[in-house]
Amino acid sequence: MIAFSPILIMGVVIAAILIAATLLVAVLRRTRPGKDWSELSARIRSWWVMAGVFFAAILVDSRVSLVFFAFLSFWALKEFVTLIETRPADHRALFWAFLAVPVQYVLVGMGWYGMFVLFIPVYMFLFLPLRLVIAGEATGFVRSASQIQWGLMAFVFGLSHLGYLLRFDEPLPGRGVDGRTLVLFLVFVTEMSDVLQYAWGKLFGRHKILPTISPNKTWEGFVGGILSASALSLLVRFLTPFSVWETLIVALLICVVGFFGGAVMSAVKRDLGTKDFGSLIPGHGGVLDRVDSLCYSAPIFFHYVRYFH
Amino acid sequence: MSGTSTNRLRDLAQILFFALLVRPFMALFIGLRVRGREHLSVPDPFVLVANHSSHLDTLSLLSLFPLGRLCHLRPCAAADYFGRNRAVLWLSRTLFNILPIARENIRPEDHPIQRMRQTLESGESLLLFPEGTRGKGSEIGELKSGVAYLAEQIPGLTVVPAYLENMARALPKGEYLPVPFFCEVRFAPPRRLSGTREQMLGQLRNDMEALRRG
Image 1 (cartoon, rainbow over the protein chains, first blue to last red):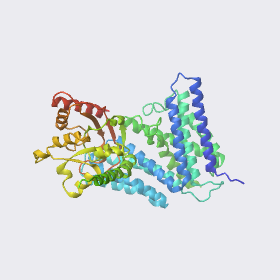
Image 2 (spheres, rainbow over the protein chains, first blue to last red):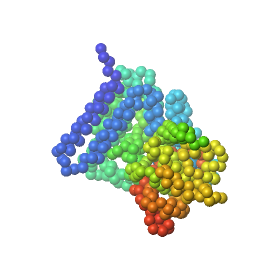
Image 3 (cartoon, chains in turn cyan, purple):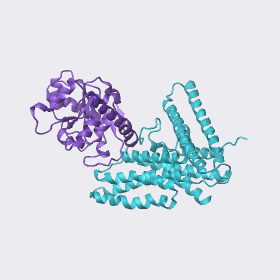
Image 4 (cartoon, rainbow over the protein chains, first blue to last red):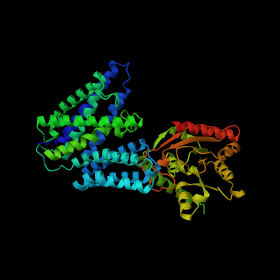
């Protein structure tokens, strides 16, 4: 008898969704050739690449996954730091902030939970302002210290919870359920929620939800996206140890905090006067534009699982 | 000393250095972005002219050339700075193929313009930072007239203007630890300079300022 692992089934599910999306765009191109579908098809092409890379990183080996997540943090921090205003006096503090990326992921790899939760919120928090003081420039000190620490918290500390989630490797109730399947569940629900909020907003969006922060986010997109993504989560319940009701509640939680993450990054972008954080991913912008919701949903989901399972 | 085999060895060392270290560093650490890369496909000899704010400038510009072309590109470098000791001189000659340019105590036999002109006439291209030194990075400093003298002496000389962004944030003057800010290189179409030397410098500055605005 062939035992199908949840990870492989998940691969089939994602491939099916992407094939459906690709076909849908092909049909739309045929039936409504007047409209410009290039951005949508660029987005879907990028989804193929992102899903492939992410899936490979999860499938191969947990060390490969950690290197991949570390690289996501590094790239997101790069995008953030390049956009903010920095002073020449911040140079060395920024160097240490970037060095915190490999350190944080080594802590994850070691499974040193205590240091994993303390390193950035306590030790980097205490050290970086000191390094700025040594640089000897008081003007703009508070701003520099705050924004560097904020970037570390969001993109390194927050995202690294994806890595620590992989460490739930004791067999959880449910066949083949482990840290890797939990990461797949979290990322699937978060990203589906993003996509569906966007789709519902485009189709039915009328009432702006955060007019001064993100004019593209609407109540219709928020409610429709979150409810449909939560419903879809039932499809991948086999990745989790949750019951039907718990799956729905957890998915709802992921979607709502994911929305908060996206909204916070929208505020950052608006403040810095830019539309996208980068141009690495065609149709999507930078890495940060794609992981913004995960910066919020990863720690929340991680602690949910840690406390209740 | 300058036998063909030592030259080949030097070319190989530079190619390996760029293929194995500089290019991965630029791709994965700096995340170098490029605009107008197609303008680099001009035939040798030409003069690549850029603003200067960091040691990363030469590294990033050279990393954009096909490896086989590196041996035909000579970055002009201050003889006093890069010849300050034997190790630095040897490294910058071997890995960067620099053309040392005298900034002080200029003797007639190694007059900068003369050396650059000979290099161009031998079919090699030049990388020139006409500000003469590294600036603070945000603005383009005064352009020295060397490139205008060259254009005057070599009719039809092709010049490729370039602008480098954020290099001084990633590695400012006086620092040796780089911070991975995204950097960008922008190239303008190859052009010729015409008119008086002042007009030539004006044309060059206009091109570079246009690149700077994006």
